[in-house]
Image (tube, rainbow, N blue to C red; front, side, top):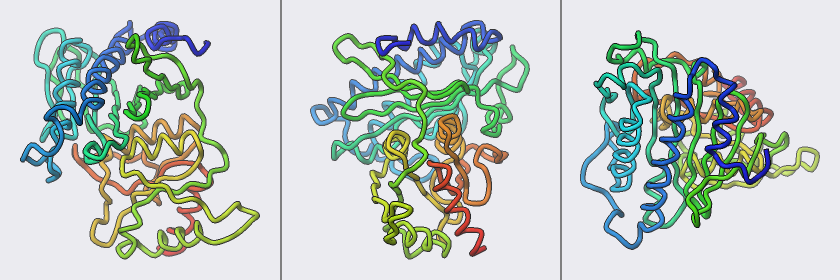
Length: 335
């Protein structure tokens, strides 16, 4: 495929990879594409209209909801419901999962987990934000309303996952288990074009991304790894470069292209870290592995974790395989 391949063309050509899907998965990804374009429009004019700042409410995690968080959540929910290809959605912004209780949705095959606007606190200062999504086949029989069990599936059961990055350009990066591909939006005609095919994390990275403001609360293994990153060693091309944006999508996207590692570990005050397994860690881990990388809690493969609740948090380390394994070595040595 050449770089002029549109996302729509790509989905049609790849439909043969999923003969059982009968087009539903392609239409679901198309619904995400449409919602992403609408959210992108609002993100790009955020400084011109009254959609900056908080709405005065908190989400289920106790975090202030930004106006664009709520807007993005509404847009993706509306797009999913109108297309009728999903029977339910779990969103980081919602207390519980949402059931689309109509005949068409009850007969749909998929559920979706979504973080509508990752890094939204960066909007006020015009820094990159994103959307993260994860798609699973339902477990309950077709024709019935979905239940919690449809959402509490390990990451190994994902049939597709991806993210949208709203930055200097807008991109959708996703995988259906057959590699990772990125599509860039041409704003003049509103079409996503294949710009990054068969994406792979570079084998040798030298970027590490972590909120070092939490250093005092890190466990010994993480502290030792950070010292390792900062030491001078020509053979291993150290010291590494520290880059941290504060948006998982933005940090992972950079490391996916340039090579590196992202860490949001557990701390002494937050043993399970901050990131949510279903909305953030599983989809990014799925992409990382499809791109030749690795994702871990430091002691366990992310995709093997059996979820116990919708908003479950886990420590998260993702990126270049050798870098992730080096972190695991330090954690194991200090366990």
